[in-house]
Image (cartoon, rainbow, N blue to C red; front, side, top):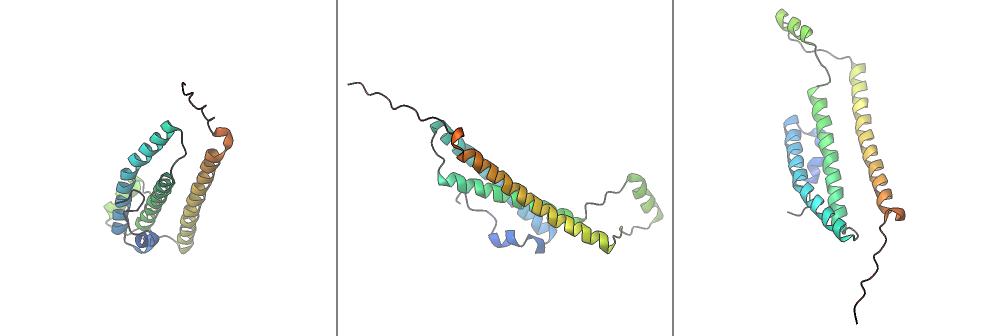
Amino acid sequence: MNSTTPSVPQELLENLESLSVGKVCLIGKELSKDLFRKIPIFLRCFKDNLDKKTYLPPEFEMLLNSCNLILQKIVECRIIIDKKLNRSNEICPDYFIKQFSKGNCSPIKKSNVLIGKEQEFDKNRIKLIKLSNALKWIDWQDTVIDPRNLKKPQAPLAVPK
Protein backbone atom coordinates (compact mmCIF):
# COMPACT_ATOMS: atom_id res chain seq x y z
CA MET A 1 0.00 0.00 0.00
CA ASN A 2 1.30 3.45 -0.91
CA SER A 3 2.08 5.78 1.99
CA THR A 4 -0.21 8.49 0.60
CA THR A 5 -3.30 6.38 -0.03
CA PRO A 6 -5.86 6.27 2.79
CA SER A 7 -6.69 2.92 4.38
CA VAL A 8 -10.40 3.80 4.59
CA PRO A 9 -12.46 4.23 1.39
CA GLN A 10 -13.31 7.84 0.54
CA GLU A 11 -17.05 7.02 0.32
CA LEU A 12 -17.10 6.09 4.01
CA LEU A 13 -15.17 9.21 5.01
CA GLU A 14 -17.67 11.45 3.23
CA ASN A 15 -20.74 9.86 4.88
CA LEU A 16 -19.67 9.55 8.52
CA GLU A 17 -22.89 11.18 9.78
CA SER A 18 -25.05 8.38 8.35
CA LEU A 19 -23.04 5.53 9.93
CA SER A 20 -23.66 3.96 13.33
CA VAL A 21 -21.49 4.81 16.33
CA GLY A 22 -19.77 1.41 16.16
CA LYS A 23 -18.79 1.87 12.52
CA VAL A 24 -17.57 5.42 13.17
CA CYS A 25 -15.44 4.04 16.05
CA LEU A 26 -13.96 1.39 13.75
CA ILE A 27 -13.22 4.00 11.08
CA GLY A 28 -11.57 6.20 13.72
CA LYS A 29 -9.48 3.23 14.86
CA GLU A 30 -8.38 2.50 11.27
CA LEU A 31 -7.58 6.18 10.69
CA SER A 32 -5.43 6.33 13.83
CA LYS A 33 -3.58 3.14 12.77
CA ASP A 34 -3.02 4.70 9.35
CA LEU A 35 -1.71 7.89 10.95
CA PHE A 36 0.66 5.90 13.21
CA ARG A 37 1.93 4.13 10.08
CA LYS A 38 2.50 7.38 8.18
CA ILE A 39 4.14 9.49 10.91
CA PRO A 40 7.51 7.62 10.85
CA ILE A 41 7.58 7.86 7.04
CA PHE A 42 6.80 11.57 7.29
CA LEU A 43 9.53 12.19 9.88
CA ARG A 44 12.13 10.12 8.00
CA CYS A 45 11.40 11.96 4.74
CA PHE A 46 11.57 15.30 6.52
CA LYS A 47 14.85 14.43 8.29
CA ASP A 48 16.49 13.10 5.11
CA ASN A 49 15.66 16.24 3.18
CA LEU A 50 16.62 18.49 6.08
CA ASP A 51 20.11 16.98 6.16
CA LYS A 52 20.57 17.37 2.40
CA LYS A 53 19.26 20.95 2.49
CA THR A 54 17.30 20.39 -0.70
CA TYR A 55 13.73 21.08 -1.64
CA LEU A 56 11.17 18.61 -0.39
CA PRO A 57 9.91 16.14 -2.99
CA PRO A 58 6.26 16.24 -4.09
CA GLU A 59 5.62 12.94 -2.28
CA PHE A 60 6.31 14.75 0.99
CA GLU A 61 3.57 17.30 0.30
CA MET A 62 1.15 14.50 -0.64
CA LEU A 63 2.01 12.68 2.59
CA LEU A 64 1.55 15.90 4.57
CA ASN A 65 -1.88 16.47 2.99
CA SER A 66 -2.82 12.87 3.70
CA CYS A 67 -1.86 13.19 7.39
CA ASN A 68 -3.77 16.47 7.62
CA LEU A 69 -6.89 14.83 6.13
CA ILE A 70 -6.60 11.90 8.54
CA LEU A 71 -6.35 14.24 11.54
CA GLN A 72 -9.40 16.19 10.35
CA LYS A 73 -11.40 12.98 9.93
CA ILE A 74 -10.36 11.70 13.37
CA VAL A 75 -11.62 14.95 14.92
CA GLU A 76 -14.82 14.66 12.88
CA CYS A 77 -15.29 11.05 14.11
CA ARG A 78 -14.88 12.24 17.69
CA ILE A 79 -17.46 15.00 17.22
CA ILE A 80 -19.96 12.60 15.63
CA ILE A 81 -19.50 10.01 18.41
CA ASP A 82 -19.92 12.65 21.12
CA LYS A 83 -23.03 13.98 19.41
CA LYS A 84 -24.64 10.57 18.93
CA LEU A 85 -23.91 9.40 22.47
CA ASN A 86 -25.01 12.71 24.04
CA ARG A 87 -21.91 12.92 26.21
CA SER A 88 -22.45 16.62 26.74
CA ASN A 89 -24.75 16.02 29.75
CA GLU A 90 -22.65 15.55 32.85
CA ILE A 91 -24.52 14.27 35.89
CA CYS A 92 -23.33 15.06 39.39
CA PRO A 93 -23.00 12.08 41.77
CA ASP A 94 -25.80 13.26 44.11
CA TYR A 95 -28.30 13.52 41.27
CA PHE A 96 -27.23 10.10 39.94
CA ILE A 97 -27.75 8.42 43.34
CA LYS A 98 -31.09 10.16 43.82
CA GLN A 99 -32.35 9.06 40.39
CA PHE A 100 -31.45 5.41 40.88
CA SER A 101 -32.67 5.24 44.46
CA LYS A 102 -36.15 6.28 43.25
CA GLY A 103 -36.14 3.61 40.59
CA ASN A 104 -36.96 6.27 38.01
CA CYS A 105 -34.31 5.78 35.34
CA SER A 106 -35.75 8.00 32.63
CA PRO A 107 -33.17 9.92 30.63
CA ILE A 108 -32.89 13.69 30.83
CA LYS A 109 -35.18 15.25 28.24
CA LYS A 110 -33.95 18.19 26.21
CA SER A 111 -36.13 20.88 24.73
CA ASN A 112 -36.28 21.30 20.96
CA VAL A 113 -34.66 24.73 21.29
CA LEU A 114 -31.70 23.23 23.17
CA ILE A 115 -31.35 20.42 20.62
CA GLY A 116 -31.37 22.95 17.78
CA LYS A 117 -28.72 25.07 19.49
CA GLU A 118 -26.54 22.00 20.10
CA GLN A 119 -26.78 21.02 16.43
CA GLU A 120 -25.88 24.56 15.37
CA PHE A 121 -22.98 24.52 17.84
CA ASP A 122 -21.68 21.23 16.40
CA LYS A 123 -21.89 22.57 12.83
CA ASN A 124 -20.06 25.75 13.83
CA ARG A 125 -17.45 23.72 15.73
CA ILE A 126 -16.70 21.58 12.67
CA LYS A 127 -16.56 24.70 10.51
CA LEU A 128 -14.13 26.38 12.94
CA ILE A 129 -11.90 23.30 13.02
CA LYS A 130 -11.73 23.25 9.21
CA LEU A 131 -11.03 27.00 9.05
CA SER A 132 -8.36 26.70 11.73
CA ASN A 133 -6.66 23.88 9.82
CA ALA A 134 -6.80 25.93 6.61
CA LEU A 135 -5.27 28.96 8.35
CA LYS A 136 -2.51 26.82 9.86
CA TRP A 137 -1.80 25.38 6.40
CA ILE A 138 -1.58 28.89 4.88
CA ASP A 139 0.70 30.03 7.72
CA TRP A 140 2.95 27.01 7.19
CA GLN A 141 3.11 27.66 3.44
CA ASP A 142 3.94 31.32 4.09
CA THR A 143 6.76 30.31 6.42
CA VAL A 144 8.17 27.74 3.99
CA ILE A 145 7.90 29.92 0.88
CA ASP A 146 9.27 33.11 2.47
CA PRO A 147 12.72 33.73 0.91
CA ARG A 148 14.03 35.19 4.17
CA ASN A 149 13.84 31.71 5.71
CA LEU A 150 15.84 29.99 2.95
CA LYS A 151 19.42 28.99 3.62
CA LYS A 152 22.16 30.62 1.56
CA PRO A 153 23.56 28.30 -1.12
CA GLN A 154 26.97 26.88 -0.40
CA ALA A 155 29.92 27.83 -2.54
CA PRO A 156 30.98 25.07 -4.95
CA LEU A 157 33.93 22.97 -3.90
CA ALA A 158 37.24 23.96 -5.45
CA VAL A 159 38.75 21.15 -7.48
CA PRO A 160 42.56 20.94 -7.17
CA LYS A 161 44.39 21.09 -10.49
